[in-house]
Image (cartoon, rainbow, N blue to C red; front, side, top):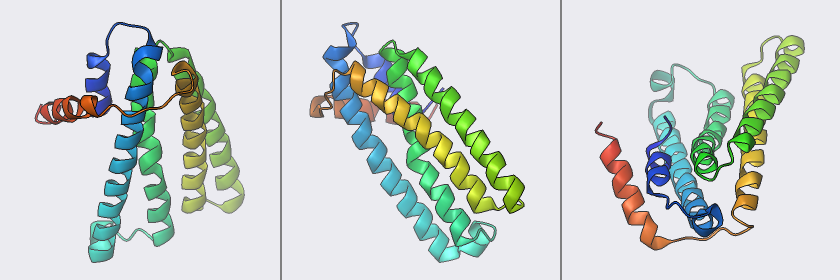
Length: 169
């Protein structure tokens, strides 16, 4: 499971130690995550502005904004899980998931009870928990990559073409 770039990356990783390949893979997925986040949010904002009431079933701007905040967080969650699994860091991924979602749930309960179900507050609470998980996973990857993040342009074309081949399936 997961997003296609992460799946392709996981299958193309050499069997050498993570510090040899992780800095470039980490950097490439950071760039991909940023690019897809910007494109996804821009497309959603464009669609919202053109036909927000119809297309988004009357979502208010605060709710729409909170949902847009989740796009890069959820993308990176998928990418980091693939990288951590490939680098032997599943315990970090599990820790990030457990802590992030637990804190998110606690914040959600704290928001919903006194605020009588305020949707933007609830979405921010969930995003905060997800963001905490993102930070834990990012820190673990940064350490596993020996504090290096690089770009390897020679990996980008096979990564993108492999991901594109996965989508028709």
